[in-house]
View (tube, helix red, strand yellow):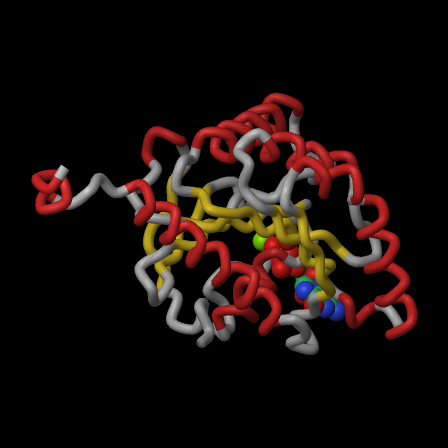
Length: 217
Ligand SMILES: Nc1nc2c(ncn2[C@@H]2O[C@H](COP(=O)(O)OP(=O)(O)O)[C@@H](O)[C@H]2O)c(=O)[nH]1
Ligand SMILES: [Mg+2]
C-alpha cells in the first residue's frame, strides 16, 4: 500500500505553539534545494502538493499533510540557505531543533540530502538534534539521477560508512532516491510504514489493562 498516495494538505504553522494535535507524524527535513518538496510531491503522486521553489530559502513555515491512515507528514523549513540574515537563520535552527526534540508524536525523521553533496555540517546537526529522541532517521540521497549507476552505488556505500558512528547510537538508514526517475518510492513506503506500525504497537503495549483484567487481579 502506498502510505502517501492520498495525502491532503492540512495546515501551515509558523510557531511551535500552533502545532496541531495529531496522533502520529513523520517529518521531512533537509538543506534548502536538496529536493525535499520534489520528494514529497513524488511520494504523494501530486504535481505540486509541496511547492518546488525556484527561490531557495523561501519556505519558512511548517506544513502538515494528512495521510490516508490518519497519520501526518510534516514538511519542515529547509536550512542552510546562505543568503538569509543571521537572526532569521537562528530562528529556523531553533524552531527545527525544538520541534525535533520535543514533538512526542514524531515517530521518525526523513532527512533529504542531495546525493552529490551529502552529510553537510547542518545535516549532521539535524542528526545530533534528533538522536536524543531515540527515534529513527531515514536518509534519502536525492537527485540520484544526476549520478551514474556506478557513482550512486559508491555514494551510498560512502555515506553508510560515514554514518557508522551514528548508527551505533540511533537507528539510521539510507537509500538512493530520484524524483525525476521515480526511484526509491517503494523503499520509503516500507521504512516509514514500519515506523507507524511500530509506533502503533508501542501505544498498544502502553494501554492500561482492561477493566475485566483488572477485576480478575
Ligand atoms: N534531476 C533532478 N532534479 C531534482 C530532483 N528533485 C529535485 N530536483 C530539482 O532541485 C531543485 C530543488 O528542488 P526542491 O524540491 O524545490 O528542493 P527543496 O528546497 O529541498 O524543497 C529544483 O530545481 C528541482 O527541480 C530529482 O530527483 N532529480
Ligand atoms: Mg521546498
